[in-house]
Structures are given as C-alpha cells and as structure tokens.
Amino acid sequence: MIKKEKISKDNIVNFPSKLTEIEKEIEAVIFAAAEPLDVDTIESKISKKSNVAKSLEKLQLEYSNRGINLVCIKDKWSFRTSPKLSGLMSQEKTVEKKLSRAAVETLAIIVYHQPVTRAEIEEIRGVAFGTNTLEILMELDWVKPAGRKDVPGRPIQYATTDEFLSHFNLHKLSDLPTVDELGAAGLIDSSSVDNDIFGTGKFFKEKQEEKKEDIYSNIDEMLNSTLDSEEKD
Figure 1 (tube, rainbow, N blue to C red):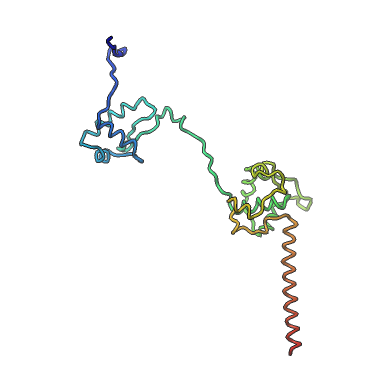
Figure 2 (figure 1 turned 180 degrees about the vertical axis):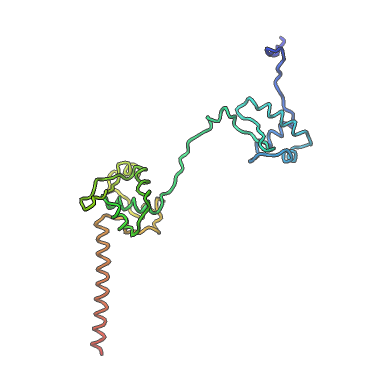
C-alpha cells in the first residue's frame, strides 16, 4: 500500500521538516543557555563550522507555530513562550513581607492593652509613629476602630479583630504568645523590641511601679550608708 502525501489546497506537497545534526546542536545550545546568545557564541559551542545565521532562520520558522518560539532580540537568540499562550504562564505569587518595627510594636500594644487610643500607643512606645502604621494593620484586618474613649476630644480606640485571632490561630486573647514565643516564630526581632510593650495594661503599670520602688530602695540604701558612716566618725 502506497502512503499518500498530504497535499495542501495550493497543490504543494507538505513534507515534515527535519533538522540536521548541526541544527539540533544549535537548538540544544540555545535551549540550555541561561541568557540569550549571539551568533558568535553559538558558533563557538557547536561541533563544526556552519552557517549558523541560516540555521537560526530555519529554526525560527520551525518554531513559529509552536507553543515556544525562537526569537531574536538585539542580535541575540533565545526561546520564549508564544505570545498567544502567555496568559497561561501568568501566576499570582504571594510575597511575604515582614512588618516594620513600628507596626509590630503598635500591633503588640493594641493586642495587649486594648482598647487603646493612638495617643496611648505613642505614650507606651515613647515615640510618635507614622500616619500609615495603623492603616497597614487595618488593611490586614488585624485591627479595627473600637469606639471612642469617654475623655475630652473623644479619641478613637483600637482593638484587634476576629481575623487577627484566626490568622495567628488563637481561640481567645488569653492564648496570646509571649514575646519570646513571637521571636522564636520569626515574627519579631525580640532583641530589639522593648519587652514592656508585651503585657496587659496592668502589667505595664506594675512595671512602672516596680521601677519607682527600685528608685526609693536605692535612696534608702544611700541614706543608711550615710548614717552608718556618720556614726563611725
């Protein structure tokens, strides 16, 4: 049985194209290259001298109707995805970015001292923070306005959301991790964050009282040492 060749409408026989060994080498060299190659570089990598420019034109035609095209940009050759199929190659990629130190400290203060006003946050941190810090936390849906404080000016108070608990896999606020646990998880640099920020409002006040008591105890020690020296004299 004689196999009939496929004949196109214009009565021209379409034979399947075949690549020579050199053309295969050129194809392989370009495919394996990490960046586009010029003709001289391609010539230096194949087994024998050849009309590389002509072979490239043939390969370009061969790949013109495939999912991968051979393209020439500024005299350098490379394989690229066909523009017709570029939509299939697109993908969404989530890029993780660490919060700034100001955002971490602000979040920690809100978490452990809520509800808390902006002024109270700045008082605890000891420094003012940028206008977008709270906006970033609210955009993440970790923080929300929680009414106004019943003081002159009625400033807005801030508190954490259910999304905050969900994101950090917490059932309730009492399950909150310590500063050491947060540092171990890589969420903060515990060596550069003031530990006083992490604790309840009561804890913060207790720390302040402890500092005052330390001051008084030092004064007592100083007075006692002075009296002892006078008695000896």
